[in-house]
Image 1 (cartoon, rainbow, N blue to C red):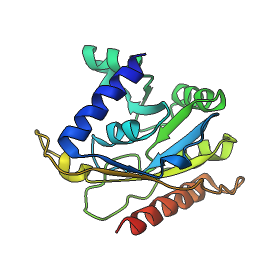
Image 2 (image 1 turned 135 degrees about the vertical axis):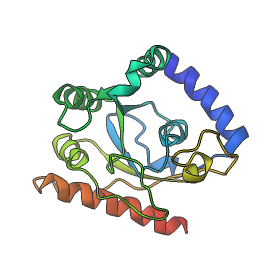
Image 3 (image 1 turned 60 degrees about the horizontal axis):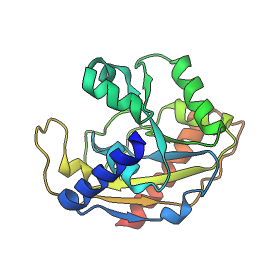
Length: 198
């Protein structure tokens, strides 16, 4: 209930403030677990991806965000997964795997952090490759644009810039390869969506 209500409110605000536009929603599986992988530009990305996706997805959020009482309560209510930075967080990984294997959606940002240069991609972390390899569920790429201008690094105020979210076809995962190679293949598909967007 909290997720649906939050998504509705954020969707209305995103339409009003950013004229958010969605494409490729038909590629999101109608049922069953799946992994949604996206580029990372801004703190607005989870909101953009979450409102664009027609199904509920759980995001992995850095555990320091859970230190703020109100924000922590909301994050827990919408199903966000706290993850410790700097070292593998086994509890977060197990929770993410449980969600996807039990038929839920899991959203990941393979780059791990927001990029600092315009039109650049950060080398992906191995975690996304690990989850894609271990979970036998569809992996769907997403490309977000505009959030880097609507709320760039260091900005304190939102800017009314158009945001676009584009989903692509399911990524073919070659299981058994090194996890970082799988993550790099995933990022290649996201880059392809970016090229198609230009």
